[in-house]
Amino acid sequence: MPLIAHNELPAFQQLHEEGQIVLSSERAEQQDIRTLHVGLLNMMPDAALIPTERQFFRLIGASNPIAQFRVHPFALPHQERGAEAQQHIDTYYETFDQIRAEGLDALIITGANVTHDNLSEEPFWEPLLEITNWAHENVTSTLCSCLATHAVLEARHGERRQHLGYKRWGVYPHRVTDKKHPLVSDINTRFNVPHSRYNVIDRERFESAGLRVLVEGEVGGVHLAVSGDGIRTVYFQGHPEYDTISLLKEFKREVIRYQQGERPDYPPFPDNYFNLTSEAIFEEYKDRLQAALDNGQSLPVFPEQLIIPNLDNTWHDSGLAVIGNWMGLVYQITNTERRLPFMSGINPENPLNLTK
Image 1 (cartoon, rainbow, N blue to C red):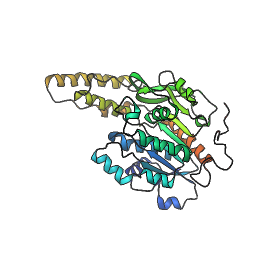
Image 2: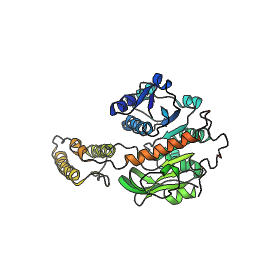
Image 3: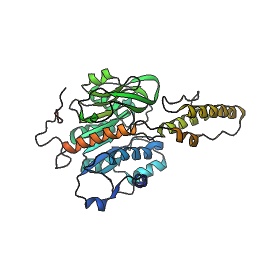
Image 4: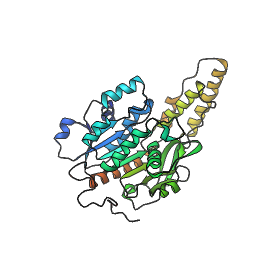
């Protein structure tokens, strides 16, 4: 069912132009359909701020046939922003005080760039914990993505992430390891997920925290896990929300860092992402770039327009299915008196009546 464009956020118009159903607030009020209110705490850096909105909005808006969605983006004032990103936030985002006053049915917390080895040293650490603690008591379900997963496991369960010693970067196969959970109902038992991170929390630490691992890959590691009650907190380590070109854009940023002397080596290719034709194009580009750098010549144009037609997306459908299942569970659990979860005889310790 549709997203509700309750303000002038450009992402709504962009998704409408893609063909997704987006209703105005006036039209939404005329629909005899339940509205779910979903928060998006967007902690991504400036370059990824707006694409991240669109990626998660797209998944939410296409996820459930029996509800319409009002999405509430907000950000942490403790993160430094450039002028353009801050203006976007000031214009279109809500504040946490507004979110807390109005309440939510579900919350998504994105990843973030970090500058310290210890997450507790990040300027957003304390405000992030304030939000996650509030959500744990007042929101039916919170979905944590990547860095947010690592932060919540450390703060709530004392399980700290471990540095890999390299960047896990690419598209990796995963398998459903717990087929009984409704979050993975009717999805492929084997599917791909993009990853982009330097740190990991392994299965042993998830299980030590009393969490339930649902999806795992031999290389990618744990992708999807849930809290012991089955729904209150959902954890992603991968990025099923990524656009087809997201890893290409990350690769381009790393190449630019190499050009500017911010990294000593030319970046490796993301695993399992570029085909042989694309890799050959990039190898030729690398040689031309290096020659230009060595000789002080003009730099060649990054060949992304040659690459984009060769990219495949092998993760979107499964990501959409998981988000659809998640929204369906939130819809079922949330009381008709919205924002008062786990009421009317629902067991808060096992609201889905799951068996081990």
